[in-house]
Image 1 (spheres, rainbow, N blue to C red):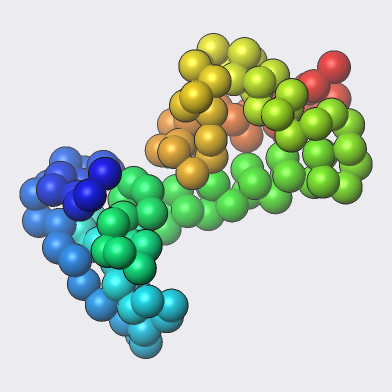
Image 2: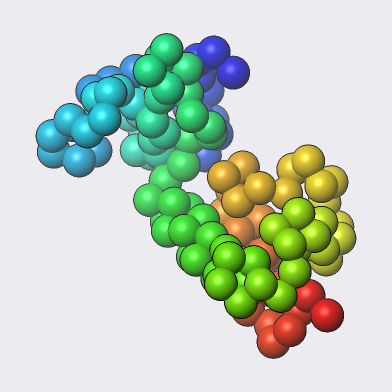
Length: 125
Ligand SMILES: [Zn+2]
């Protein structure tokens, strides 16, 4: 993905590359982001200017972070299974292809679906 023409959240073509001060009030990192002027979905950029991922609204960013917080501690600290195995299992439970099973790629619906799974007790067993 070299640039973004249509918003992944609302479909608008009113997406522009902007200073990320538009989101944070001042510039962070390389200072750039893609920004949807209709729904305010946004995503940061690599230093090359390429987008880091898909445009997301604040609520989806929060959902993704919640997924990560819950999921990552399972392989990082509790070590219930390896990271790879956990992602594989999650993909199976969500019945989605494994190569799409990354929280950074999830929009609202899949985040909620993932949370429903990973908040169940010992879902990996
Ligand atoms: Zn939008």
